[in-house]
Length: 152
Image (cartoon, rainbow, N blue to C red):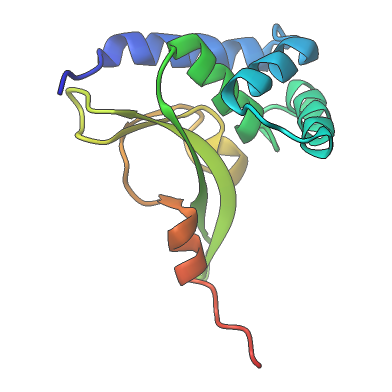
């Protein structure tokens, strides 16, 4: 299996984040990209994407992970969007699993499974991460396994 060039990925991730920070990405473009990456969206989901894109443009990085990951995948031309979580640990050592999306780009010279995240700073994480898939990033399966069981 061929590996992806980490420097190219990093450069595209940096420019994507910068474009969000300065408001250089239009909401209609983000909606179009979401439709490309997520075929079969219902009308309700599409409304959610429009609202999310509007908020992402206005308040990046807060609540921007979905459209930011869509745009990043669009610019890279590859990757798998991960509907996962970001583990936040408070000063008392208690963990919460915040729902979060990021991009897995496969093998690079940095890791067998490399992820790219341009909006983790909404949870106190780095503003840009390109590296191994490690904690605090996790899948929704990990999120579900850490929730207490509901009492019956």
